[in-house]
Image 1: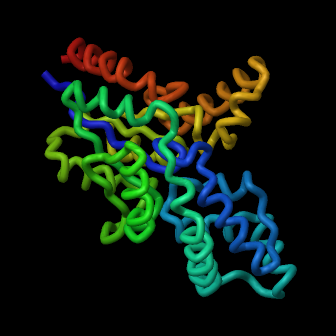
Image 2: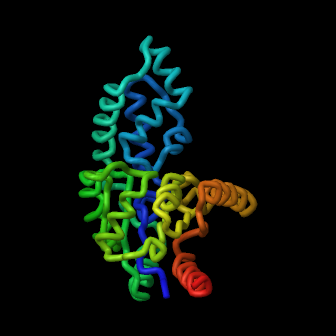
Length: 265
């Protein structure tokens, strides 16, 4: 009988960096340095992708492409993408360690999952060099997955499934249906769907919610419910099997998936 053997987590906005603010700030700054003001909502839209792909996606947005053309009198090129990516990395590394606090309930929930016999994997839009900053800092604060896979050396990052496949290999999980992907972006959802694993979105702390912890806590109940419902809608539209409010709902959900698979068998 199949059952869930591992949970594969995203990093920023899912397990660390409540609201996924570290990359947003760096994207805004790197475009500002060439005289292009981008909106936080635009910066967040491709979130979860490998960062150079994210910058390329920003350049392809109609408004940003038009702003670049108006300022420079030409269309953007791949050289512009690479230049912004190099500058983005400088901005990100300047503050990345400051955005490594685990999101509330992550350490204890991960401990509960491990106590239930599950392995803990991870995928990310960050590079291995970036994760060399994030991983040890997060570990010092109580969160350390068994495996951390980046897209370095793989055919592609999200939304392609290769990082999930590498997790399954490294964790020794033979069936994709014995894995859960848990993340906070639409790219996370599509990654899980493309890999054929159980795919679960998380609302609070997410890039999609786009709020600090204090901002989320300050919302009036009606507004909080409305904004959370909109995030759920987007995640389900992207193909999520389930969406939970926060990580504390995950252990119970894993039990539900196990019962569902037992019934289907």
